[in-house]
Amino acid sequence: CQNGGTCNRLALDYSCSCLPGYSGRNCETDLCQPTICQNGGTCNRLPLNYNCFCLPGYSGRKCETDLCLPTTCQNGGTCNRLALDYSCSCLPGYSGRNCETGVYSIYTDHLCQPSTCQNGGTCNRLPLNFNCSCLPGFSGRNCETDLCLPTICQNGGTCNRLPLNYNCFCLPGYSGRNCETGGGIYLCQPLVCQNGGTCNKLPLNYNCSCLPGYSGRNCETGMYGYLCLPTTCQNGGTCNRLALDYSCSCLPGHSGRNCETDLCQPSACQNGGTCNRLPLNYNCSCLSGYSGRNCETGGHMCYALLPTTCQNGGTCNRLPLNYSCFCLPGYSGRNCETGVGIYLCQPLICQNGGTCNRLPLNYSCSCLPGYSGRNCETDLCQPSACQNGGTCNKLPMNYSCYCLPGYSGRNCETDLCQPLVCQNGGTCNKLPLNYNCSCLPGYSGRNCETGMYGYVCYPNPCVNGGNCSRNVDGYRCQCQLGYIGRNCDQDLCGSFPCQNNGTCNKLPQNYSCSCSPSFTGANCES
Image (cartoon, rainbow, N blue to C red; front, side, top):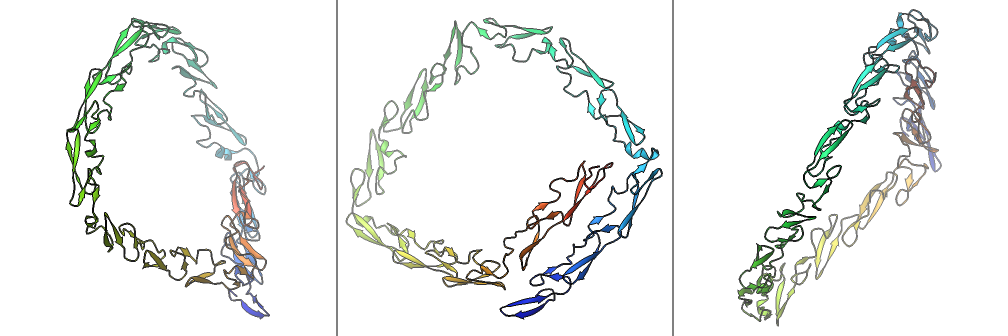
Protein backbone atom coordinates (compact mmCIF):
# COMPACT_ATOMS: atom_id res chain seq x y z
CA CYS A 1 0.00 0.00 0.00
CA GLN A 2 1.71 3.16 -1.26
CA ASN A 3 1.78 6.78 -0.02
CA GLY A 4 1.34 5.85 3.68
CA GLY A 5 -1.67 3.57 3.17
CA THR A 6 -2.43 0.76 5.63
CA CYS A 7 -2.63 -2.84 4.36
CA ASN A 8 -5.57 -4.95 5.61
CA ARG A 9 -5.25 -8.74 5.32
CA LEU A 10 -8.26 -10.53 3.81
CA ALA A 11 -8.93 -14.18 2.98
CA LEU A 12 -6.93 -14.81 -0.24
CA ASP A 13 -6.67 -11.04 -0.80
CA TYR A 14 -5.92 -7.68 0.79
CA SER A 15 -7.21 -4.11 0.81
CA CYS A 16 -5.60 -0.72 1.42
CA SER A 17 -6.90 2.07 3.70
CA CYS A 18 -5.57 5.23 2.03
CA LEU A 19 -4.64 8.59 3.57
CA PRO A 20 -6.81 11.57 2.54
CA GLY A 21 -6.13 12.60 -1.05
CA TYR A 22 -5.04 9.15 -2.26
CA SER A 23 -7.01 6.39 -4.01
CA GLY A 24 -6.59 3.23 -6.07
CA ARG A 25 -6.12 -0.47 -5.38
CA ASN A 26 -2.72 0.26 -3.78
CA CYS A 27 -3.24 3.97 -2.89
CA GLU A 28 -1.02 4.67 -5.93
CA THR A 29 -3.10 7.59 -7.23
CA ASP A 30 -2.22 10.99 -5.70
CA LEU A 31 -5.35 13.10 -6.24
CA CYS A 32 -3.30 16.23 -5.39
CA GLN A 33 -0.84 15.94 -8.26
CA PRO A 34 1.42 19.02 -8.71
CA THR A 35 -0.59 20.28 -11.70
CA ILE A 36 -4.10 19.34 -10.53
CA CYS A 37 -4.88 22.88 -9.25
CA GLN A 38 -3.94 25.33 -11.98
CA ASN A 39 -3.04 29.01 -12.05
CA GLY A 40 -1.46 28.95 -8.56
CA GLY A 41 -4.37 27.21 -6.84
CA THR A 42 -3.74 25.18 -3.66
CA CYS A 43 -4.82 21.53 -3.44
CA ASN A 44 -6.66 20.43 -0.27
CA ARG A 45 -6.69 16.66 0.41
CA LEU A 46 -10.04 15.11 1.40
CA PRO A 47 -10.93 11.44 2.06
CA LEU A 48 -10.97 9.86 -1.42
CA ASN A 49 -11.24 13.35 -2.94
CA TYR A 50 -9.74 16.86 -3.10
CA ASN A 51 -10.70 20.46 -3.74
CA CYS A 52 -8.82 23.54 -4.95
CA PHE A 53 -8.54 26.97 -3.25
CA CYS A 54 -8.20 29.35 -6.23
CA LEU A 55 -6.36 32.68 -6.41
CA PRO A 56 -8.54 35.77 -7.04
CA GLY A 57 -9.79 35.91 -10.63
CA TYR A 58 -9.81 32.13 -11.18
CA SER A 59 -12.61 29.59 -10.79
CA GLY A 60 -13.59 26.03 -11.66
CA ARG A 61 -13.08 22.58 -10.16
CA LYS A 62 -9.32 22.92 -10.83
CA CYS A 63 -9.03 26.74 -11.00
CA GLU A 64 -8.75 26.25 -14.77
CA THR A 65 -10.98 29.19 -15.71
CA ASP A 66 -9.16 32.54 -15.96
CA LEU A 67 -11.84 35.19 -15.52
CA CYS A 68 -9.43 37.89 -16.76
CA LEU A 69 -8.77 36.75 -20.34
CA PRO A 70 -7.04 39.24 -22.70
CA THR A 71 -10.40 40.01 -24.32
CA THR A 72 -12.55 40.06 -21.15
CA CYS A 73 -12.42 43.86 -20.79
CA GLN A 74 -12.98 45.42 -24.22
CA ASN A 75 -11.96 48.75 -25.77
CA GLY A 76 -8.76 49.08 -23.73
CA GLY A 77 -10.34 48.34 -20.34
CA THR A 78 -8.24 46.88 -17.48
CA CYS A 79 -9.31 43.61 -15.80
CA ASN A 80 -9.20 43.45 -11.97
CA ARG A 81 -9.14 40.00 -10.35
CA LEU A 82 -11.55 39.47 -7.44
CA ALA A 83 -12.34 36.43 -5.31
CA LEU A 84 -14.34 34.16 -7.67
CA ASP A 85 -15.07 37.19 -9.91
CA TYR A 86 -13.55 40.14 -11.79
CA SER A 87 -14.30 43.77 -12.63
CA CYS A 88 -13.29 46.05 -15.52
CA SER A 89 -11.82 49.56 -15.23
CA CYS A 90 -13.02 51.19 -18.48
CA LEU A 91 -11.38 53.99 -20.48
CA PRO A 92 -13.30 57.29 -20.59
CA GLY A 93 -16.33 57.07 -22.86
CA TYR A 94 -16.87 53.31 -22.30
CA SER A 95 -19.07 51.48 -19.82
CA GLY A 96 -20.70 48.13 -19.13
CA ARG A 97 -19.67 44.88 -17.38
CA ASN A 98 -16.91 44.41 -19.99
CA CYS A 99 -16.57 48.04 -21.25
CA GLU A 100 -18.47 46.90 -24.32
CA THR A 101 -20.60 50.06 -24.58
CA GLY A 102 -19.01 53.30 -25.81
CA VAL A 103 -19.10 56.27 -28.14
CA TYR A 104 -16.57 57.61 -30.64
CA SER A 105 -13.70 59.34 -28.87
CA ILE A 106 -9.98 59.83 -29.13
CA TYR A 107 -9.61 56.29 -27.87
CA THR A 108 -10.24 54.87 -31.33
CA ASP A 109 -6.54 55.60 -31.95
CA HIS A 110 -5.76 51.91 -31.50
CA LEU A 111 -7.56 51.19 -34.81
CA CYS A 112 -5.10 53.35 -36.79
CA GLN A 113 -1.81 51.59 -36.17
CA PRO A 114 1.25 52.42 -38.37
CA SER A 115 0.74 49.19 -40.33
CA THR A 116 -3.07 49.40 -40.64
CA CYS A 117 -3.02 51.05 -44.11
CA GLN A 118 -0.35 49.42 -46.28
CA ASN A 119 1.70 50.68 -49.26
CA GLY A 120 1.73 54.32 -48.05
CA GLY A 121 -2.02 54.60 -47.45
CA THR A 122 -3.42 57.14 -44.96
CA CYS A 123 -5.60 55.96 -42.04
CA ASN A 124 -8.78 58.00 -41.37
CA ARG A 125 -10.47 57.61 -37.96
CA LEU A 126 -14.25 57.20 -37.97
CA PRO A 127 -16.73 56.69 -35.14
CA LEU A 128 -15.86 53.18 -33.89
CA ASN A 129 -14.17 52.44 -37.25
CA PHE A 130 -11.56 53.58 -39.80
CA ASN A 131 -10.91 53.65 -43.54
CA CYS A 132 -7.81 53.95 -45.72
CA SER A 133 -7.06 56.56 -48.43
CA CYS A 134 -4.84 54.59 -50.82
CA LEU A 135 -2.06 55.90 -53.09
CA PRO A 136 -2.70 55.62 -56.86
CA GLY A 137 -2.45 52.03 -58.07
CA PHE A 138 -3.44 50.42 -54.74
CA SER A 139 -6.83 49.23 -53.48
CA GLY A 140 -8.50 47.11 -50.80
CA ARG A 141 -9.70 47.63 -47.20
CA ASN A 142 -6.08 48.19 -46.09
CA CYS A 143 -4.58 49.21 -49.49
CA GLU A 144 -3.05 45.71 -49.61
CA THR A 145 -3.69 45.10 -53.34
CA ASP A 146 -0.99 46.39 -55.75
CA LEU A 147 -2.68 46.89 -59.13
CA CYS A 148 0.75 47.22 -60.81
CA LEU A 149 2.04 43.69 -60.29
CA PRO A 150 5.40 42.96 -62.00
CA THR A 151 3.73 40.92 -64.76
CA ILE A 152 0.61 43.04 -65.31
CA CYS A 153 2.04 44.91 -68.35
CA GLN A 154 3.42 42.35 -70.82
CA ASN A 155 6.14 42.51 -73.50
CA GLY A 156 8.18 45.20 -71.73
CA GLY A 157 5.27 47.56 -71.08
CA THR A 158 5.43 50.05 -68.17
CA CYS A 159 2.68 50.16 -65.54
CA ASN A 160 1.28 53.62 -64.67
CA ARG A 161 -0.55 53.89 -61.33
CA LEU A 162 -3.93 55.76 -61.33
CA PRO A 163 -6.39 56.37 -58.47
CA LEU A 164 -7.96 52.92 -57.88
CA ASN A 165 -6.73 51.83 -61.35
CA TYR A 166 -3.73 51.55 -63.70
CA ASN A 167 -2.81 51.68 -67.38
CA CYS A 168 0.09 50.33 -69.45
CA PHE A 169 2.52 52.31 -71.68
CA CYS A 170 3.34 49.73 -74.39
CA LEU A 171 6.54 49.45 -76.46
CA PRO A 172 6.22 50.22 -80.20
CA GLY A 173 4.23 47.55 -82.02
CA TYR A 174 2.29 46.33 -78.95
CA SER A 175 -1.22 47.24 -77.84
CA GLY A 176 -4.07 46.13 -75.58
CA ARG A 177 -5.03 46.69 -71.93
CA ASN A 178 -1.86 44.83 -70.84
CA CYS A 179 0.27 45.20 -74.06
CA GLU A 180 -0.56 41.59 -74.83
CA THR A 181 -1.15 42.07 -78.59
CA GLY A 182 1.33 42.28 -81.54
CA GLY A 183 4.79 43.71 -81.85
CA GLY A 184 7.24 42.11 -84.30
CA ILE A 185 10.10 43.96 -82.63
CA TYR A 186 10.13 41.26 -79.97
CA LEU A 187 9.43 38.33 -82.29
CA CYS A 188 13.11 38.05 -83.26
CA GLN A 189 14.08 35.43 -80.74
CA PRO A 190 17.67 34.07 -80.99
CA LEU A 191 16.76 30.93 -83.03
CA VAL A 192 13.69 32.09 -84.96
CA CYS A 193 15.68 32.28 -88.23
CA GLN A 194 17.34 28.90 -88.79
CA ASN A 195 20.54 27.85 -90.59
CA GLY A 196 22.35 31.15 -89.98
CA GLY A 197 19.54 33.41 -91.22
CA THR A 198 19.24 37.03 -89.98
CA CYS A 199 16.03 38.27 -88.30
CA ASN A 200 14.65 41.68 -89.42
CA LYS A 201 12.24 43.42 -87.03
CA LEU A 202 9.11 44.92 -88.63
CA PRO A 203 6.12 46.72 -87.09
CA LEU A 204 3.95 43.93 -85.70
CA ASN A 205 6.00 41.31 -87.64
CA TYR A 206 9.45 40.07 -88.72
CA ASN A 207 11.17 38.42 -91.69
CA CYS A 208 14.35 36.36 -92.20
CA SER A 209 17.28 37.08 -94.56
CA CYS A 210 18.48 33.53 -95.41
CA LEU A 211 21.98 32.36 -96.38
CA PRO A 212 22.44 31.19 -99.99
CA GLY A 213 20.76 27.84 -100.58
CA TYR A 214 18.09 28.27 -97.86
CA SER A 215 14.52 29.54 -98.05
CA GLY A 216 11.21 29.53 -96.19
CA ARG A 217 9.59 31.72 -93.52
CA ASN A 218 12.36 30.79 -91.06
CA CYS A 219 15.06 29.63 -93.56
CA GLU A 220 14.14 26.07 -92.63
CA THR A 221 14.33 24.70 -96.22
CA GLY A 222 17.73 24.03 -97.91
CA MET A 223 18.47 23.09 -101.52
CA TYR A 224 21.18 20.66 -100.37
CA GLY A 225 18.83 18.28 -98.63
CA TYR A 226 20.58 17.08 -95.44
CA LEU A 227 22.25 19.87 -93.46
CA CYS A 228 25.92 19.76 -92.52
CA LEU A 229 25.42 20.30 -88.81
CA PRO A 230 28.46 20.19 -86.47
CA THR A 231 27.53 16.65 -85.36
CA THR A 232 26.60 15.22 -88.80
CA CYS A 233 30.06 13.65 -89.44
CA GLN A 234 31.34 11.95 -86.29
CA ASN A 235 34.85 11.16 -85.00
CA GLY A 236 36.43 14.25 -86.63
CA GLY A 237 35.01 13.65 -90.13
CA THR A 238 34.48 16.57 -92.56
CA CYS A 239 31.01 17.27 -94.04
CA ASN A 240 30.80 17.95 -97.82
CA ARG A 241 27.63 19.56 -99.27
CA LEU A 242 26.30 17.96 -102.45
CA ALA A 243 23.33 18.71 -104.63
CA LEU A 244 20.39 17.27 -102.67
CA ASP A 245 22.81 15.31 -100.40
CA TYR A 246 26.05 15.36 -98.40
CA SER A 247 29.06 13.10 -97.79
CA CYS A 248 31.58 12.66 -94.98
CA SER A 249 35.38 12.49 -95.40
CA CYS A 250 36.42 10.25 -92.51
CA LEU A 251 39.72 10.21 -90.60
CA PRO A 252 41.86 7.05 -90.99
CA GLY A 253 40.40 4.04 -89.18
CA HIS A 254 36.78 5.24 -89.39
CA SER A 255 34.02 4.42 -91.85
CA GLY A 256 30.27 4.61 -92.35
CA ARG A 257 27.79 7.14 -93.73
CA ASN A 258 28.61 9.51 -90.83
CA CYS A 259 32.06 8.10 -89.87
CA GLU A 260 30.31 6.45 -86.92
CA THR A 261 32.24 3.14 -87.14
CA ASP A 262 35.61 2.96 -85.34
CA LEU A 263 37.52 0.16 -87.09
CA CYS A 264 40.01 0.03 -84.20
CA GLN A 265 37.55 -1.08 -81.56
CA PRO A 266 39.17 -2.23 -78.28
CA SER A 267 38.79 -5.90 -79.28
CA ALA A 268 39.84 -5.57 -82.95
CA CYS A 269 43.41 -6.83 -82.36
CA GLN A 270 43.49 -9.86 -80.05
CA ASN A 271 46.16 -11.29 -77.73
CA GLY A 272 47.76 -7.90 -76.98
CA GLY A 273 48.12 -6.79 -80.59
CA THR A 274 48.23 -3.05 -81.48
CA CYS A 275 45.68 -1.55 -83.90
CA ASN A 276 46.96 0.81 -86.65
CA ARG A 277 44.41 3.11 -88.35
CA LEU A 278 44.51 3.28 -92.17
CA PRO A 279 42.27 5.16 -94.64
CA LEU A 280 39.00 3.20 -94.57
CA ASN A 281 40.87 0.24 -92.99
CA TYR A 282 43.20 -0.95 -90.21
CA ASN A 283 45.88 -3.55 -89.52
CA CYS A 284 47.27 -5.23 -86.38
CA SER A 285 50.88 -5.38 -85.09
CA CYS A 286 50.92 -8.76 -83.28
CA LEU A 287 53.02 -9.87 -80.29
CA SER A 288 55.68 -12.55 -80.85
CA GLY A 289 54.10 -15.94 -81.58
CA TYR A 290 50.78 -14.52 -82.89
CA SER A 291 49.56 -13.94 -86.45
CA GLY A 292 46.42 -13.43 -88.49
CA ARG A 293 44.26 -10.45 -89.50
CA ASN A 294 43.44 -9.82 -85.80
CA CYS A 295 46.39 -11.70 -84.16
CA GLU A 296 43.95 -14.48 -83.41
CA THR A 297 46.31 -17.35 -84.40
CA GLY A 298 49.36 -18.61 -82.48
CA GLY A 299 50.70 -19.20 -78.97
CA HIS A 300 47.67 -17.65 -77.33
CA MET A 301 47.68 -20.40 -74.68
CA CYS A 302 50.61 -18.58 -72.99
CA TYR A 303 48.68 -15.30 -72.86
CA ALA A 304 48.12 -13.71 -69.48
CA LEU A 305 44.41 -14.46 -69.61
CA LEU A 306 45.23 -18.24 -69.50
CA PRO A 307 47.63 -18.68 -66.56
CA THR A 308 46.72 -22.40 -66.28
CA THR A 309 48.01 -23.42 -69.73
CA CYS A 310 51.02 -25.15 -68.09
CA GLN A 311 49.69 -27.03 -65.05
CA ASN A 312 51.24 -28.05 -61.70
CA GLY A 313 53.62 -25.06 -61.56
CA GLY A 314 54.98 -25.46 -65.10
CA THR A 315 56.37 -22.42 -67.02
CA CYS A 316 54.97 -21.48 -70.46
CA ASN A 317 57.51 -20.73 -73.24
CA ARG A 318 56.23 -18.92 -76.36
CA LEU A 319 57.38 -20.25 -79.71
CA PRO A 320 56.61 -18.95 -83.20
CA LEU A 321 52.98 -19.94 -83.69
CA ASN A 322 53.28 -22.39 -80.77
CA TYR A 323 54.35 -22.88 -77.12
CA SER A 324 56.03 -25.43 -74.82
CA CYS A 325 55.93 -26.09 -71.06
CA PHE A 326 58.92 -26.48 -68.66
CA CYS A 327 57.53 -28.88 -66.02
CA LEU A 328 58.54 -29.23 -62.35
CA PRO A 329 60.30 -32.50 -61.37
CA GLY A 330 57.89 -35.43 -61.30
CA TYR A 331 55.51 -33.92 -63.90
CA SER A 332 55.31 -34.46 -67.65
CA GLY A 333 52.98 -34.12 -70.61
CA ARG A 334 52.15 -31.36 -73.13
CA ASN A 335 50.82 -29.18 -70.28
CA CYS A 336 52.61 -30.86 -67.32
CA GLU A 337 49.31 -32.52 -66.54
CA THR A 338 50.86 -35.94 -65.65
CA GLY A 339 52.67 -36.44 -62.31
CA VAL A 340 53.16 -38.55 -59.20
CA GLY A 341 51.79 -37.86 -55.71
CA ILE A 342 55.23 -37.56 -54.08
CA TYR A 343 55.44 -34.00 -55.38
CA LEU A 344 51.88 -33.09 -54.47
CA CYS A 345 52.61 -33.16 -50.69
CA GLN A 346 54.12 -29.68 -50.42
CA PRO A 347 54.94 -28.47 -46.86
CA LEU A 348 51.78 -26.36 -46.49
CA ILE A 349 49.38 -28.28 -48.73
CA CYS A 350 47.43 -29.58 -45.69
CA GLN A 351 46.49 -26.57 -43.55
CA ASN A 352 45.76 -26.14 -39.82
CA GLY A 353 48.09 -28.99 -38.72
CA GLY A 354 46.69 -31.58 -41.14
CA THR A 355 48.87 -34.50 -42.29
CA CYS A 356 49.50 -35.10 -46.03
CA ASN A 357 49.14 -38.68 -47.30
CA ARG A 358 50.84 -39.50 -50.64
CA LEU A 359 48.74 -41.50 -53.09
CA PRO A 360 49.47 -42.68 -56.63
CA LEU A 361 49.05 -39.53 -58.76
CA ASN A 362 47.19 -37.86 -55.88
CA TYR A 363 47.20 -37.05 -52.15
CA SER A 364 44.80 -36.74 -49.21
CA CYS A 365 44.81 -34.78 -45.91
CA SER A 366 44.10 -36.19 -42.43
CA CYS A 367 42.63 -33.20 -40.55
CA LEU A 368 42.79 -32.39 -36.84
CA PRO A 369 39.46 -32.41 -34.94
CA GLY A 370 37.31 -29.40 -35.86
CA TYR A 371 38.74 -28.96 -39.39
CA SER A 372 37.52 -30.23 -42.77
CA GLY A 373 37.93 -29.72 -46.52
CA ARG A 374 40.24 -31.02 -49.28
CA ASN A 375 43.21 -29.27 -47.59
CA CYS A 376 41.78 -28.95 -44.01
CA GLU A 377 41.18 -25.28 -44.84
CA THR A 378 37.77 -25.04 -43.13
CA ASP A 379 37.80 -24.25 -39.39
CA LEU A 380 34.45 -25.56 -38.13
CA CYS A 381 34.94 -23.53 -34.91
CA GLN A 382 35.16 -20.19 -36.69
CA PRO A 383 34.77 -17.18 -34.36
CA SER A 384 31.04 -16.85 -34.99
CA ALA A 385 30.14 -20.57 -34.91
CA CYS A 386 28.93 -20.49 -31.29
CA GLN A 387 26.93 -17.32 -30.64
CA ASN A 388 26.08 -15.41 -27.45
CA GLY A 389 29.31 -16.34 -25.64
CA GLY A 390 29.05 -20.09 -26.26
CA THR A 391 32.23 -22.22 -26.28
CA CYS A 392 33.10 -24.29 -29.36
CA ASN A 393 34.25 -27.90 -28.83
CA LYS A 394 36.17 -29.43 -31.76
CA LEU A 395 35.15 -32.98 -32.77
CA PRO A 396 36.43 -35.19 -35.60
CA MET A 397 34.97 -33.61 -38.78
CA ASN A 398 32.43 -31.79 -36.59
CA TYR A 399 31.93 -29.47 -33.57
CA SER A 400 29.52 -28.83 -30.72
CA CYS A 401 28.67 -25.72 -28.65
CA TYR A 402 28.54 -25.37 -24.84
CA CYS A 403 25.97 -22.58 -24.31
CA LEU A 404 25.82 -20.05 -21.48
CA PRO A 405 22.74 -20.28 -19.19
CA GLY A 406 19.62 -19.02 -20.94
CA TYR A 407 20.76 -19.91 -24.49
CA SER A 408 20.16 -23.02 -26.62
CA GLY A 409 20.33 -24.33 -30.19
CA ARG A 410 23.00 -25.88 -32.44
CA ASN A 411 24.98 -22.59 -32.30
CA CYS A 412 23.51 -21.12 -29.05
CA GLU A 413 21.54 -18.79 -31.31
CA THR A 414 18.29 -18.94 -29.30
CA ASP A 415 18.01 -16.44 -26.42
CA LEU A 416 15.45 -17.98 -24.06
CA CYS A 417 15.14 -14.61 -22.27
CA GLN A 418 13.80 -12.66 -25.23
CA PRO A 419 12.84 -9.04 -24.40
CA LEU A 420 9.12 -9.78 -23.99
CA VAL A 421 9.16 -13.35 -22.69
CA CYS A 422 8.33 -12.23 -19.11
CA GLN A 423 5.22 -10.06 -19.34
CA ASN A 424 3.84 -7.26 -17.16
CA GLY A 425 7.25 -6.08 -15.95
CA GLY A 426 8.50 -9.51 -14.87
CA THR A 427 12.27 -10.22 -14.75
CA CYS A 428 13.76 -13.11 -16.78
CA ASN A 429 16.31 -15.36 -15.02
CA LYS A 430 18.63 -17.41 -17.26
CA LEU A 431 19.07 -21.10 -16.31
CA PRO A 432 21.05 -23.87 -18.03
CA LEU A 433 19.02 -24.59 -21.20
CA ASN A 434 15.99 -22.91 -19.58
CA TYR A 435 14.66 -19.76 -17.84
CA ASN A 436 12.12 -18.65 -15.26
CA CYS A 437 10.32 -15.35 -14.55
CA SER A 438 10.28 -13.32 -11.31
CA CYS A 439 6.84 -11.65 -11.47
CA LEU A 440 5.75 -8.32 -9.97
CA PRO A 441 3.28 -8.57 -7.04
CA GLY A 442 -0.16 -9.62 -8.24
CA TYR A 443 1.08 -11.52 -11.33
CA SER A 444 1.76 -15.23 -11.84
CA GLY A 445 2.19 -17.88 -14.51
CA ARG A 446 5.13 -19.23 -16.56
CA ASN A 447 5.57 -15.78 -18.19
CA CYS A 448 3.73 -13.59 -15.60
CA GLU A 449 0.84 -13.48 -18.03
CA THR A 450 -1.86 -13.83 -15.35
CA GLY A 451 -2.70 -10.78 -13.17
CA MET A 452 -5.33 -10.07 -10.54
CA TYR A 453 -5.69 -6.42 -11.64
CA GLY A 454 -7.39 -6.90 -15.02
CA TYR A 455 -6.02 -4.50 -17.65
CA VAL A 456 -2.36 -3.58 -17.38
CA CYS A 457 -0.48 -0.52 -18.57
CA TYR A 458 1.91 -2.33 -20.92
CA PRO A 459 1.83 -1.17 -23.60
CA ASN A 460 0.49 2.22 -22.50
CA PRO A 461 -3.13 2.54 -23.72
CA CYS A 462 -3.14 6.28 -22.91
CA VAL A 463 -2.25 8.35 -25.99
CA ASN A 464 -1.22 12.01 -26.39
CA GLY A 465 1.10 11.86 -23.36
CA GLY A 466 -1.49 10.48 -20.93
CA ASN A 467 -0.28 8.63 -17.81
CA CYS A 468 -1.69 5.13 -17.16
CA SER A 469 -2.39 3.83 -13.65
CA ARG A 470 -4.00 0.56 -12.54
CA ASN A 471 -7.20 0.54 -10.53
CA VAL A 472 -9.80 -2.00 -9.48
CA ASP A 473 -11.73 -1.40 -12.72
CA GLY A 474 -8.69 -2.07 -14.90
CA TYR A 475 -6.84 1.18 -15.65
CA ARG A 476 -7.40 4.91 -15.84
CA CYS A 477 -5.68 7.61 -17.88
CA GLN A 478 -4.52 10.95 -16.45
CA CYS A 479 -4.73 13.13 -19.60
CA GLN A 480 -2.59 16.12 -20.57
CA LEU A 481 -4.21 19.54 -20.86
CA GLY A 482 -6.83 19.73 -23.59
CA TYR A 483 -7.39 15.96 -23.98
CA ILE A 484 -10.30 13.83 -22.76
CA GLY A 485 -11.66 10.32 -23.27
CA ARG A 486 -11.05 6.86 -21.88
CA ASN A 487 -7.60 6.81 -23.55
CA CYS A 488 -7.03 10.61 -23.87
CA ASP A 489 -7.78 10.21 -27.59
CA GLN A 490 -9.99 13.31 -27.98
CA ASP A 491 -8.14 16.60 -28.67
CA LEU A 492 -10.50 19.41 -27.65
CA CYS A 493 -8.51 21.93 -29.73
CA GLY A 494 -8.17 19.52 -32.67
CA SER A 495 -11.43 20.60 -34.31
CA PHE A 496 -10.41 24.32 -34.20
CA PRO A 497 -13.42 25.38 -32.09
CA CYS A 498 -12.22 29.01 -31.77
CA GLN A 499 -13.63 31.01 -34.66
CA ASN A 500 -12.48 34.23 -36.35
CA ASN A 501 -8.73 33.52 -35.83
CA GLY A 502 -9.16 32.95 -32.09
CA THR A 503 -6.48 30.94 -30.25
CA CYS A 504 -7.43 27.69 -28.51
CA ASN A 505 -5.95 27.27 -24.99
CA LYS A 506 -5.82 23.73 -23.59
CA LEU A 507 -7.18 23.26 -20.04
CA PRO A 508 -7.69 20.12 -17.93
CA GLN A 509 -10.59 18.30 -19.64
CA ASN A 510 -11.61 21.58 -21.28
CA TYR A 511 -10.43 24.47 -23.46
CA SER A 512 -10.83 28.24 -23.67
CA CYS A 513 -10.57 30.68 -26.59
CA SER A 514 -8.42 33.84 -26.71
CA CYS A 515 -10.33 35.97 -29.24
CA SER A 516 -9.00 38.48 -31.75
CA PRO A 517 -9.95 42.12 -31.11
CA SER A 518 -13.65 42.88 -31.79
CA PHE A 519 -14.73 39.24 -31.23
CA THR A 520 -16.24 37.70 -28.10
CA GLY A 521 -18.05 34.60 -26.96
CA ALA A 522 -16.99 31.18 -25.70
CA ASN A 523 -15.78 30.34 -29.23
CA CYS A 524 -15.18 33.93 -30.47
CA GLU A 525 -18.33 33.57 -32.52
CA SER A 526 -19.71 37.10 -31.80
